[in-house]
Structure formats: C-alpha cells, structure tokens
Picture 1 (tube, one colour):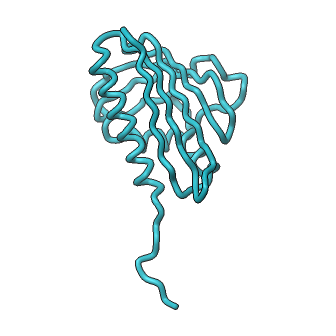
Picture 2 (cartoon, rainbow, N blue to C red; picture 1 turned 45 degrees about the horizontal axis):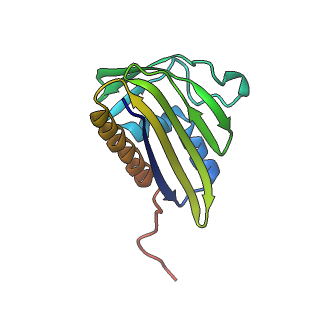
Picture 3 (cartoon, rainbow, N blue to C red; picture 1 turned 120 degrees about the vertical axis):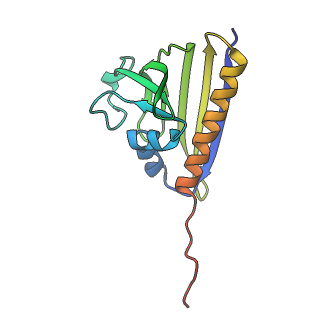
Length: 159
C-alpha cells in the first residue's frame, strides 16, 4: 500500500468569504458531490464547526452513498485544523482508507479566489483503483464548483 497525493485547484470569480461559507456548509458539500456521492452528515449538522474545541474530535459517523442510495464507505468525520475563512484539514478515519487527509485552502487571487484541495490517502486495498476514483471524484467536485460559481454576464447591454 502506498500513499497517494493529489491536488486540485479552481480559480473562481467570487470572494474568499463566499467560497469559505460554501466550502464549510453541508449544502455546499452536498452540491459538489452530487450526483456521484451523497454524504449522510450527522443529524442537525448544517456547517463545519469552527471552534477550536471541536478539533480532533469525531463529529459523528457519515455514510457515503453511491448515487445517494448504495452505502460504499463510512467516515468518522473529524477536523484537525481550521483557520476560519482560509483553510481546514479534515482527517477522518474511513473504512476504505488506512489514512486520509483532505485540506481545502481558500486563497485570495487577482479577480477572484483560488480553491485548492490537497489530498493524501492510503487505500486499504486496490491502490490504483482507489487513486483513480478519488482523482475522478475530486475533478468532478471542482467541475461542480466551476459551474456553480462561474462568472455570469448579462446577455445584452443597453447603453
């Protein structure tokens, strides 16, 4: 088993605050994952807790449901670092992974914001298949981010 490291980046025409709120909300995570996976969050959870007291403690069990129906993995959702408005690190025990670390950074940029996801993981089995799936899945998440936040322009201008 070997550790895989991949990074995904999107530059979006939105403010860091808007993208931080999206990235730490259950609604935003659900939208990015759909329709491939649905994460069954702990009951009542609407956003990632941002108080230091919750760091390193599992927030509850989360089932990953393929196409919103078929259970394919289980996570004990755990955040180990958080810099509100800037970045978080989720390092949750997963049934499918010997090790899992997901960092999302929200970085101000000229004319917008960069969203950078860095993943380090060690699948328990089938490393190549796991690496392929995680890479495709996070590409899908970034495609969803780009669709959600692409610049919208008026079709016509009256002068």
